[in-house]
Length: 563
Picture (tube, helix red, strand yellow):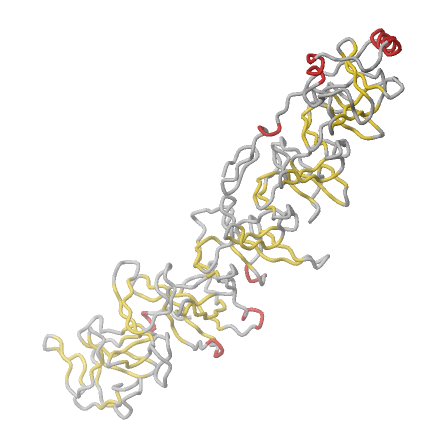
């Protein structure tokens, strides 16, 4: 795109005036003496006189004989006159010859290369004197030779096009009440044509530098009624349909893309929402957000993302990472970007559960400094609403503003409609976001790796995506985190008021023996017993009775900051 002057879009290039350039001659007049001489000759000489070939050429190639449908032509003192059957010279009228019309002025002399006013209409005659038809002239206005030249079009009857639209070589042109061809913004309404001072849907058009109405193409311009040379004026992209009307609302399949326009035809960029006027109840696509804006995506039903001024089309069927509406214009690196899902119709996914109040709620967590710690939101531990959605066969969590959630999410209020239960979920890194199941290795901010396990299915002992608490495959977990002995080779860990003996690999011990480290007895389970009645029970192999603990017990809540 060219940012200078009258810019173009999608390689559209304006045509030049080459086809319009026409050279005009200079009109002549005859003196009173010449006219008197002609009248004397008319009385003394018969009109059947022979005229030389040179004289005929002076009239022009279009006039090849004396005889005309209206009168007879004769050259007198180098100028042409048209006479009636009585030998009187015609004045202020058209005379025809060989299908063309020629105008004689008030002195009876042929007029050339000049404007002609006749019966309240305006015509133009060329250098041979013939009235031009279906053709253009670049000339000064009829009544002001000192004014700038303008383009005029003369119709099949020779009349100047005025206050109307003309189709020429399959292109549309507009002419004001003075016959001047208009460029730029034009208003055409009920056969009234004028330069546009404001935008009227269906009645405002744009003509390029050649005067041709834009159709199925773009222009980058100031608004109607604003001077092009106004340095302070904003410019916008406009698209004009095959009818020449400016596109408003949603424009689909514009060179294969979808664009959104407000009700004055201006292409919208960035975050765009379908808004409703409180005064008129009218629908309109408008940009939302910006500095000091309090707008949230959850305030709207239909939201789109349309890139910047040099892009502008609505994104479709893809993930897109960008700033929130209030931060988008700044694009400050200090402002976090978020992932959003945009469907095949260009709509940004925004959970509808927000309106019904049926959302699950939860908190954010992140693995930091060897602990799964709750993250602060806006400086405090704030809960937020959650909706689960499947995208491309994978499960994702979104908040009410359509932001994809990542890392660890602890659900504290379930939503059975979404299949969300209380527990800890994991969604990979910031640029992943898909819900994880099964065994997972997660690095903390120090680069240390920790083991987790999240349910793979919904059953009596686990829920899909939820961190396991208790015994899973003879390993001890708490909200998905593998619990291992830390300070000693063996330690007792308490989970949901159940005690387990675990080693440094997190394996649950259930033998009635002495658990030693360097010959020191850490845990004496010789007289102990373990719960083994239900093999599916998450408390399998928890201590039942008779175990003597000689070292510190692991408090699993110490490795996870739980609100």
